[in-house]
Amino acid sequence: MSRCNSLLRFRSSLALFLVVCPAGCSNDGAEVQDRFPQEHLPDYITILHEGGERPDWSIGGDAIAFVTEEGGDVMEKNLASGEVRGLSTHYDLGEFSNYYRVMYMADGNLILTGGPERHDAYMQVLDASLDREPHQMGVKVIEGPAVSRVTLPVKIAYCPEGQDKIRFATLRYGEDGTPVLEDDRLVIDGHDLPAQEGVAYSGMIEPQNWRPPEEKELIFSRYSYSEADGFLSETWGWHRETGALVNYSNLPKRYAEPEGVFPGGEHTLIESDLDDGRGVSHLDLYSLKLDGSGETVRLTHFADVGLWKANNGIVSPDGRYVAFQESQGGFGQGWGRIYLLDLEAAGIEQP
Image (cartoon, rainbow, N blue to C red):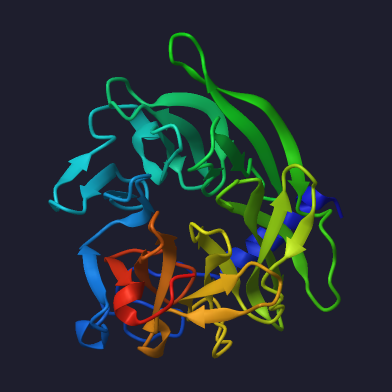
Protein backbone atom coordinates (compact mmCIF):
# COMPACT_ATOMS: atom_id res chain seq x y z
CA MET A 1 0.00 0.00 0.00
CA SER A 2 1.36 3.48 -0.86
CA ARG A 3 2.18 6.02 1.84
CA CYS A 4 -0.62 8.26 0.63
CA ASN A 5 -3.18 5.47 0.81
CA SER A 6 -1.88 4.36 4.20
CA LEU A 7 -2.30 7.86 5.60
CA LEU A 8 -5.77 8.22 4.14
CA ARG A 9 -6.75 4.91 5.68
CA PHE A 10 -5.36 6.02 9.02
CA ARG A 11 -7.14 9.37 8.89
CA SER A 12 -10.43 7.63 8.03
CA SER A 13 -10.04 5.29 11.01
CA LEU A 14 -9.09 8.24 13.20
CA ALA A 15 -12.16 10.19 12.16
CA LEU A 16 -14.32 7.34 13.42
CA PHE A 17 -12.38 7.05 16.66
CA LEU A 18 -12.05 10.74 17.50
CA VAL A 19 -15.47 12.31 17.42
CA VAL A 20 -15.52 16.05 17.95
CA CYS A 21 -18.44 16.62 20.30
CA PRO A 22 -20.41 19.84 20.39
CA ALA A 23 -21.85 21.07 23.67
CA GLY A 24 -24.39 18.61 24.99
CA CYS A 25 -22.74 15.32 24.01
CA SER A 26 -19.68 13.21 24.72
CA ASN A 27 -18.01 10.09 23.39
CA ASP A 28 -19.26 7.96 26.27
CA GLY A 29 -22.81 9.33 26.32
CA ALA A 30 -22.39 11.45 29.45
CA GLU A 31 -23.90 14.90 29.49
CA VAL A 32 -21.54 17.74 28.62
CA GLN A 33 -21.76 21.04 30.48
CA ASP A 34 -21.22 24.36 28.74
CA ARG A 35 -18.39 25.60 31.00
CA PHE A 36 -15.91 24.16 33.47
CA PRO A 37 -17.41 24.37 37.01
CA GLN A 38 -15.86 27.46 38.59
CA GLU A 39 -15.87 25.92 42.08
CA HIS A 40 -13.08 23.62 40.87
CA LEU A 41 -10.84 26.49 39.76
CA PRO A 42 -7.88 27.17 42.06
CA ASP A 43 -7.15 30.81 42.96
CA TYR A 44 -4.20 30.95 40.59
CA ILE A 45 -6.33 30.19 37.51
CA THR A 46 -8.65 32.94 36.33
CA ILE A 47 -10.96 33.40 33.36
CA LEU A 48 -9.21 35.47 30.69
CA HIS A 49 -11.98 35.50 28.09
CA GLU A 50 -15.44 33.96 27.89
CA GLY A 51 -15.17 32.55 24.39
CA GLY A 52 -12.78 31.86 21.54
CA GLU A 53 -10.26 29.35 20.25
CA ARG A 54 -6.56 28.96 19.55
CA PRO A 55 -5.10 31.87 21.59
CA ASP A 56 -1.62 33.26 20.98
CA TRP A 57 0.44 35.73 23.02
CA SER A 58 1.56 38.97 21.45
CA ILE A 59 5.34 39.38 21.25
CA GLY A 60 5.29 41.97 24.03
CA GLY A 61 2.95 39.92 26.21
CA ASP A 62 0.37 42.69 26.50
CA ALA A 63 -2.36 41.05 24.38
CA ILE A 64 -3.75 37.75 23.21
CA ALA A 65 -5.11 37.05 19.74
CA PHE A 66 -7.67 34.31 19.10
CA VAL A 67 -10.32 33.16 16.66
CA THR A 68 -13.92 33.57 17.79
CA GLU A 69 -14.81 30.03 16.72
CA GLU A 70 -13.67 27.46 14.19
CA GLY A 71 -14.00 29.32 10.90
CA GLY A 72 -14.68 32.60 12.69
CA ASP A 73 -13.03 36.03 12.98
CA VAL A 74 -9.61 36.92 14.40
CA MET A 75 -9.73 39.13 17.49
CA GLU A 76 -7.19 40.61 19.90
CA LYS A 77 -7.70 41.31 23.62
CA ASN A 78 -5.62 43.90 25.47
CA LEU A 79 -4.85 42.34 28.84
CA ALA A 80 -4.53 45.63 30.74
CA SER A 81 -7.70 47.32 29.51
CA GLY A 82 -9.76 44.27 28.58
CA GLU A 83 -10.55 45.90 25.23
CA VAL A 84 -11.22 43.49 22.36
CA ARG A 85 -10.68 44.59 18.77
CA GLY A 86 -11.16 42.84 15.46
CA LEU A 87 -8.07 42.02 13.43
CA SER A 88 -9.80 40.36 10.49
CA THR A 89 -13.18 42.07 10.60
CA HIS A 90 -11.94 44.97 8.42
CA TYR A 91 -11.74 42.76 5.34
CA ASP A 92 -13.98 40.50 3.27
CA LEU A 93 -12.10 37.70 1.56
CA GLY A 94 -15.18 35.55 1.11
CA GLU A 95 -14.68 31.97 2.26
CA PHE A 96 -11.04 32.82 2.98
CA SER A 97 -12.24 35.03 5.84
CA ASN A 98 -13.12 31.86 7.76
CA TYR A 99 -10.21 31.65 10.22
CA TYR A 100 -8.72 28.78 12.21
CA ARG A 101 -5.34 29.96 13.50
CA VAL A 102 -3.52 33.20 14.33
CA MET A 103 0.13 33.63 15.31
CA TYR A 104 2.31 36.64 16.08
CA MET A 105 5.69 36.77 14.33
CA ALA A 106 9.03 38.30 15.32
CA ASP A 107 8.64 41.05 12.70
CA GLY A 108 5.43 42.30 14.34
CA ASN A 109 3.07 40.96 11.70
CA LEU A 110 0.73 37.99 12.04
CA ILE A 111 0.23 34.69 10.25
CA LEU A 112 -3.38 33.61 9.78
CA THR A 113 -4.84 30.45 8.30
CA GLY A 114 -8.17 30.90 6.56
CA GLY A 115 -10.27 29.04 4.06
CA PRO A 116 -13.46 27.09 3.43
CA GLU A 117 -12.72 24.39 6.03
CA ARG A 118 -10.27 23.67 8.86
CA HIS A 119 -8.33 21.26 6.63
CA ASP A 120 -8.79 23.44 3.55
CA ALA A 121 -7.12 26.58 4.91
CA TYR A 122 -4.38 28.75 3.44
CA MET A 123 -1.58 30.84 4.86
CA GLN A 124 -2.15 34.60 5.02
CA VAL A 125 0.11 37.41 6.29
CA LEU A 126 -1.63 40.25 8.12
CA ASP A 127 0.28 43.52 8.45
CA ALA A 128 0.23 44.71 12.08
CA SER A 129 -0.92 48.15 10.93
CA LEU A 130 -4.14 46.62 9.55
CA ASP A 131 -3.74 49.07 6.65
CA ARG A 132 -3.99 46.33 4.04
CA GLU A 133 -6.04 43.17 3.77
CA PRO A 134 -4.38 39.86 4.66
CA HIS A 135 -2.08 38.77 1.85
CA GLN A 136 -2.94 35.37 0.42
CA MET A 137 0.26 33.31 0.18
CA GLY A 138 -1.33 30.59 -1.95
CA VAL A 139 0.04 27.94 0.41
CA LYS A 140 -2.25 25.34 1.93
CA VAL A 141 -1.61 24.67 5.61
CA ILE A 142 -2.90 21.71 7.60
CA GLU A 143 -3.32 22.79 11.23
CA GLY A 144 -1.08 25.67 12.30
CA PRO A 145 2.44 26.60 11.17
CA ALA A 146 5.31 27.27 13.57
CA VAL A 147 6.71 30.80 13.23
CA SER A 148 9.79 32.36 14.80
CA ARG A 149 8.92 34.87 17.53
CA VAL A 150 12.43 35.98 18.49
CA THR A 151 14.78 35.80 15.50
CA LEU A 152 14.68 37.47 12.08
CA PRO A 153 14.04 36.92 9.27
CA VAL A 154 10.94 34.95 10.25
CA LYS A 155 11.26 31.20 9.82
CA ILE A 156 8.09 29.20 9.08
CA ALA A 157 7.53 25.45 9.32
CA TYR A 158 4.23 24.06 8.07
CA CYS A 159 2.40 20.92 7.01
CA PRO A 160 1.04 20.88 3.47
CA GLU A 161 -1.93 18.73 2.53
CA GLY A 162 -1.64 15.22 3.90
CA GLN A 163 -0.05 16.20 7.24
CA ASP A 164 2.72 13.63 6.87
CA LYS A 165 5.42 16.13 5.87
CA ILE A 166 6.85 19.38 7.23
CA ARG A 167 8.20 22.12 4.96
CA PHE A 168 10.50 24.96 5.99
CA ALA A 169 10.78 28.45 4.50
CA THR A 170 11.95 31.98 5.23
CA LEU A 171 9.46 34.85 5.11
CA ARG A 172 10.71 37.97 3.36
CA TYR A 173 9.11 41.10 1.91
CA GLY A 174 9.43 42.76 -1.46
CA GLU A 175 10.03 46.48 -1.98
CA ASP A 176 6.27 47.06 -1.95
CA GLY A 177 5.89 45.11 1.30
CA THR A 178 4.46 41.99 -0.36
CA PRO A 179 5.40 38.89 1.68
CA VAL A 180 6.91 35.86 -0.03
CA LEU A 181 8.20 32.48 1.14
CA GLU A 182 11.79 31.90 0.04
CA ASP A 183 13.78 28.66 -0.06
CA ASP A 184 10.62 26.65 0.65
CA ARG A 185 11.67 23.01 0.98
CA LEU A 186 10.74 19.66 2.49
CA VAL A 187 12.64 18.96 5.71
CA ILE A 188 10.75 16.15 7.51
CA ASP A 189 8.87 13.17 6.09
CA GLY A 190 6.78 11.57 8.81
CA HIS A 191 7.21 8.14 7.24
CA ASP A 192 11.02 8.36 7.32
CA LEU A 193 11.39 9.17 11.02
CA PRO A 194 13.05 6.54 13.27
CA ALA A 195 10.84 3.62 14.24
CA GLN A 196 10.35 2.44 17.80
CA GLU A 197 9.43 -1.08 18.77
CA GLY A 198 5.82 -1.39 19.87
CA VAL A 199 4.75 2.06 18.57
CA ALA A 200 2.40 2.15 15.55
CA TYR A 201 3.45 5.47 14.00
CA SER A 202 1.00 6.78 11.44
CA GLY A 203 3.30 9.17 9.60
CA MET A 204 1.14 12.06 10.81
CA ILE A 205 3.18 15.00 12.20
CA GLU A 206 2.61 18.66 13.08
CA PRO A 207 4.99 21.61 13.70
CA GLN A 208 4.39 23.40 16.98
CA ASN A 209 7.07 25.92 18.04
CA TRP A 210 10.61 27.08 17.36
CA ARG A 211 12.68 26.55 20.49
CA PRO A 212 13.97 29.85 21.94
CA PRO A 213 16.22 31.66 22.33
CA GLU A 214 18.07 30.81 19.08
CA GLU A 215 15.05 29.16 17.40
CA LYS A 216 17.23 26.69 15.53
CA GLU A 217 15.22 23.67 16.68
CA LEU A 218 11.64 22.90 15.70
CA ILE A 219 9.49 21.21 18.33
CA PHE A 220 6.90 19.06 16.61
CA SER A 221 4.25 16.42 17.30
CA ARG A 222 4.50 12.86 16.05
CA TYR A 223 1.35 10.74 16.18
CA SER A 224 0.59 7.06 16.41
CA TYR A 225 -2.58 5.01 16.42
CA SER A 226 -3.46 1.43 17.21
CA GLU A 227 -6.55 -0.43 18.36
CA ALA A 228 -4.75 -1.31 21.58
CA ASP A 229 -3.41 2.13 22.51
CA GLY A 230 -5.73 4.51 20.66
CA PHE A 231 -4.50 7.88 19.37
CA LEU A 232 -1.20 9.01 20.92
CA SER A 233 1.26 11.86 20.43
CA GLU A 234 4.94 12.37 21.17
CA THR A 235 7.11 15.47 21.50
CA TRP A 236 10.01 15.54 19.03
CA GLY A 237 12.65 18.03 17.98
CA TRP A 238 14.37 18.70 14.64
CA HIS A 239 17.48 20.91 14.40
CA ARG A 240 17.39 22.96 11.21
CA GLU A 241 21.19 23.23 10.93
CA THR A 242 22.30 19.73 11.90
CA GLY A 243 19.17 17.76 11.02
CA ALA A 244 19.33 16.05 14.42
CA LEU A 245 16.10 14.38 15.58
CA VAL A 246 15.21 13.81 19.24
CA ASN A 247 12.26 12.15 20.98
CA TYR A 248 11.89 14.39 24.03
CA SER A 249 8.81 12.89 25.68
CA ASN A 250 9.73 9.18 25.62
CA LEU A 251 6.22 8.28 26.76
CA PRO A 252 5.16 5.67 24.16
CA LYS A 253 1.95 4.72 25.99
CA ARG A 254 0.82 8.24 26.84
CA TYR A 255 -0.48 11.24 24.88
CA ALA A 256 2.18 13.99 24.99
CA GLU A 257 1.56 16.72 22.42
CA PRO A 258 3.75 19.84 22.65
CA GLU A 259 1.98 23.20 22.63
CA GLY A 260 4.12 26.15 23.73
CA VAL A 261 7.82 26.47 24.63
CA PHE A 262 8.91 28.42 27.70
CA PRO A 263 11.12 31.43 26.86
CA GLY A 264 14.24 29.88 28.39
CA GLY A 265 13.95 27.05 25.88
CA GLU A 266 14.52 24.30 28.43
CA HIS A 267 10.88 23.22 28.79
CA THR A 268 7.73 23.01 26.71
CA LEU A 269 4.08 22.66 27.57
CA ILE A 270 2.47 19.37 26.65
CA GLU A 271 -1.13 18.17 26.62
CA SER A 272 -1.00 14.80 28.31
CA ASP A 273 -2.86 11.98 30.05
CA LEU A 274 0.36 11.20 31.90
CA ASP A 275 -1.17 10.53 35.33
CA ASP A 276 -4.03 8.25 34.38
CA GLY A 277 -3.49 7.07 30.80
CA ARG A 278 -7.13 7.65 29.81
CA GLY A 279 -6.22 8.99 26.40
CA VAL A 280 -6.95 12.07 24.33
CA SER A 281 -10.35 12.63 25.98
CA HIS A 282 -8.75 13.34 29.37
CA LEU A 283 -5.84 15.75 29.01
CA ASP A 284 -4.14 18.27 31.27
CA LEU A 285 -1.20 20.62 30.83
CA TYR A 286 2.29 19.69 32.01
CA SER A 287 5.72 21.20 31.55
CA LEU A 288 8.19 18.80 29.92
CA LYS A 289 11.93 19.22 30.22
CA LEU A 290 13.55 19.25 26.78
CA ASP A 291 16.51 17.05 27.65
CA GLY A 292 15.10 13.61 26.85
CA SER A 293 14.66 12.72 30.53
CA GLY A 294 10.85 12.83 30.35
CA GLU A 295 10.78 14.99 33.49
CA THR A 296 7.38 16.67 33.86
CA VAL A 297 5.42 18.89 36.23
CA ARG A 298 1.62 18.88 36.18
CA LEU A 299 0.12 22.36 35.85
CA THR A 300 -3.66 21.83 35.60
CA HIS A 301 -6.24 19.36 36.94
CA PHE A 302 -9.19 19.81 34.59
CA ALA A 303 -9.27 16.09 33.71
CA ASP A 304 -10.05 15.30 37.36
CA VAL A 305 -13.51 16.86 36.87
CA GLY A 306 -15.98 14.91 34.75
CA LEU A 307 -15.21 14.98 31.04
CA TRP A 308 -13.19 18.19 31.11
CA LYS A 309 -9.68 18.69 29.83
CA ALA A 310 -7.21 21.58 29.47
CA ASN A 311 -5.53 22.12 26.11
CA ASN A 312 -4.06 24.59 23.61
CA GLY A 313 -1.66 26.02 26.18
CA ILE A 314 0.64 28.95 25.35
CA VAL A 315 3.36 30.52 27.50
CA SER A 316 3.69 34.27 28.05
CA PRO A 317 6.92 35.89 26.79
CA ASP A 318 8.11 36.40 30.38
CA GLY A 319 7.38 32.76 31.27
CA ARG A 320 5.13 33.59 34.23
CA TYR A 321 1.72 32.87 32.71
CA VAL A 322 0.09 30.09 30.75
CA ALA A 323 -3.06 30.81 28.75
CA PHE A 324 -5.11 27.76 27.77
CA GLN A 325 -8.57 26.51 26.85
CA GLU A 326 -11.18 24.16 28.14
CA SER A 327 -12.65 21.28 26.18
CA GLN A 328 -14.51 18.04 26.78
CA GLY A 329 -14.12 14.49 25.53
CA GLY A 330 -13.42 13.53 21.94
CA PHE A 331 -10.71 15.29 20.01
CA GLY A 332 -12.09 18.81 20.48
CA GLN A 333 -9.42 21.37 19.69
CA GLY A 334 -10.62 23.63 22.50
CA TRP A 335 -13.66 25.84 22.83
CA GLY A 336 -15.41 27.95 25.43
CA ARG A 337 -13.39 29.90 27.93
CA ILE A 338 -9.77 30.96 27.72
CA TYR A 339 -8.03 30.78 31.11
CA LEU A 340 -4.91 32.32 32.63
CA LEU A 341 -2.66 30.33 34.97
CA ASP A 342 -0.27 32.34 37.14
CA LEU A 343 2.71 30.06 37.83
CA GLU A 344 4.12 32.39 40.50
CA ALA A 345 0.82 32.51 42.39
CA ALA A 346 0.57 28.73 42.08
CA GLY A 347 3.96 28.31 43.71
CA ILE A 348 5.24 26.50 40.62
CA GLU A 349 8.83 27.28 39.72
CA GLN A 350 8.90 28.97 36.33
CA PRO A 351 10.68 26.57 33.95
